[in-house]
Every structure is written in structure tokens, then in C-alpha cells.
Image (cartoon, rainbow, N blue to C red; front, side):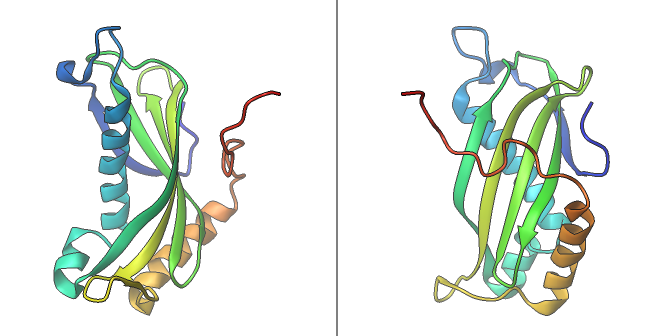
Length: 159
């Protein structure tokens, strides 16, 4: 099952039109699925679409690492959870998990780094304190959990 204490960021069944000729979910749709989980996360911390409309500022993804662990098939029910790995005045680092909602098996993960950006200048700026407190509180709550073993991992090849 998904690790307890993480933020739930979605659940849905894999659409038939996301399946390739091998009978598996196409790789690009994993990114789209995690983008949906990101939107739920950003709304939860008050830095989502409504914030962007209100302030002109928003969170930009500046780095990501996606891991494919198991095949996803049409109709398979997926559950998404998010763990905040760190946050400071301008950055938030998260780890999303996609798990089979029935078995709890981990299907894919994505680690992301976001920067808070002023939309008018496209410059990195501090997250406003009233929103930053929400992020800090969630980061502190998640800091009690161990970091996922894959967090911070790069792509490598044996020599």
C-alpha cells in the first residue's frame, strides 16, 4: 500500500487511449498523470491556478526525474501521493508516487523541484509568507518520514 501520512493527490483509472501497441501506458502519459498530481499538490498549499490568477506569480518546475517501475494497463486504478522533501523561501522539492490502488504496488515515481516565479518579470522570488507557512508546515510534517530511497537518484549505467 501507499506509505501512510503522505498527501493524497489523486486517484483515477488509466484511460484506454493512453495505451500503446505493447498494451502498456505510454511514457508521456506518466508525466501528464504526475502533472495532475502536481496541480492537486499546488492547490493544497495555496500556490495553484487560483494563486496564479490572483497574483500573476506561480510555481515553475525546473527539474524532474521520472522512474517507471511497473507497467500500467487500461482501466487500472492508480493512486497518487506526494511527499515534500524540502522547502525554503523560494523552492519546494517533492516526491510523487503512483501506486496501484488495489495492490499498493508502486508503479512509478517522480521527483520535482519547483521555483516560485514572478510572472511579470519571470524572476525567482520568495514565496509570500502566508503561503510559505503552509509549505513549511507540510515540509516539517513530512520531514519526520524517511526520504524515499530513490530521492536524489540520477540515471547511471554500470561500467
